[in-house]
Length: 592
Image (cartoon, rainbow, N blue to C red; front, side, top):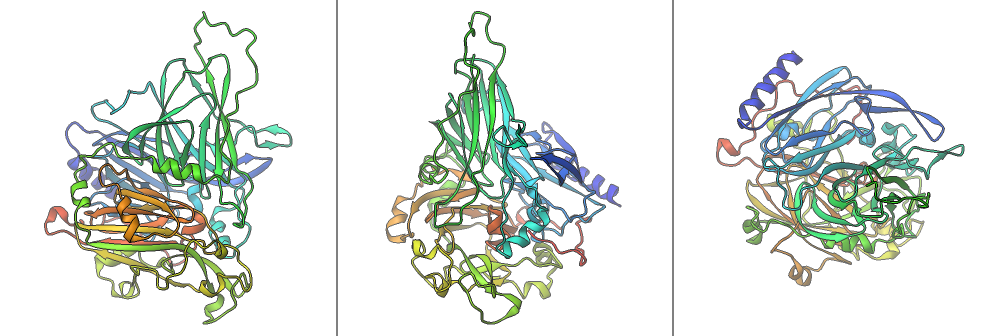
């Protein structure tokens, strides 16, 4: 049955593939294996035994088919982060939103097309915190072979992540109980780097060998659960050329900021003195006190020159590698200005004229943390009391996933038992307050935040007619913490119009909108104690997850679903689900 369904899928996608496009096919076998880091043997869940997982390399217009064979003990989905999935919401891979997880000892094949997309995306599990080890890069090269910038001599994926000793399936539950829940180390391409050691023996570092004068396209992916990162290479500078598989107006910098979920494409010319070695460093950014403080997460690799011209005299060259001067780990200003420098390279984008016109729907979404009472109590003590439980919210509603049927399937089948329990996400916060008041950060009995902590849990969605122009203003808050918020929308790219510090003021801040050449993204960095405004066209029918990409925000509920109606024609209508769409198991709790 599974083989027949896979054959049918292949036939369908091949029929949709243009004659000159290719079919890129992979098999992902998900299973557990032991890995040892920091003197500890850890059981981890991997694809094909690789950490990070296998890269998917394709050309614009290609069709990708991935056969997932689940030999792990957990329900699994794979989300193709940033792939637009045009009229293909069933393949988006958001657990309990677009599909039930692939159960242990079962298989499912994903198929999707990459028409109209070039650049760097990535894939990751979308059930529980397993994406910490289940992830990999997606590289989409231009069909013509030409870039709107100097063609690089080599592509180099750089995946920034974390190493966890903890059972990742238990990590989400620990968030809800406010337990200490930290990773063991940061990683670059799966290597912890020589700053981490086991009984005095340094961990392996990722090593990039370069040739003098050549240009390298570093495809940066932040796959971390916890932190935004600064990235630098000593002695070298970058030209930022793309983000989230959309080209940018190039700009030069020596430091890149990349938030969880984001990708950044940067050119690096190997133009430093070739006799030296140079450290590349990924440094986690965290909010300053009074926010709860994490250990300092930093990983470093090495850039080493090879094929040095015989005329170059390296005699007497220093042995030690050059170390870059990094921003402070509490520096949130550099990332604010870095993201503010992003501008689009395609002012002729086909949707930009519509985005510049009238807005059909406006949402103002406050992002914060609150609490709910334990044990279904109607009232309880707050301020860190054991009677209440920490949650995250959007407009004071903490998202709750269904556990018996995925939202998209329930909508398609007209399942009233589930659809009747889905609430509309409020357009604005239910009670206005000074969202960025630093006095709201500390959690303590009698603290200023205690009166506005109470939050409710619900399955929320917001419905849009086909082709509606939607504006969303995300407002970060100081409620019980003051982190930034990398907000990711499935199924659509959006235009980032502006960002700012403090509370958003429509009367004044809308005048700062960039409607000339805004960057096109799928993940927006909403700054700490600030806001970001986006617009998109709801032109892809389906049920699309919108959530923060910090795991400690999405797991406790900083999420919702945007439902886009079918259009007026068969070509704008979501097709039926695949016949082998996974079924839910009542025996196993599944989380996002």
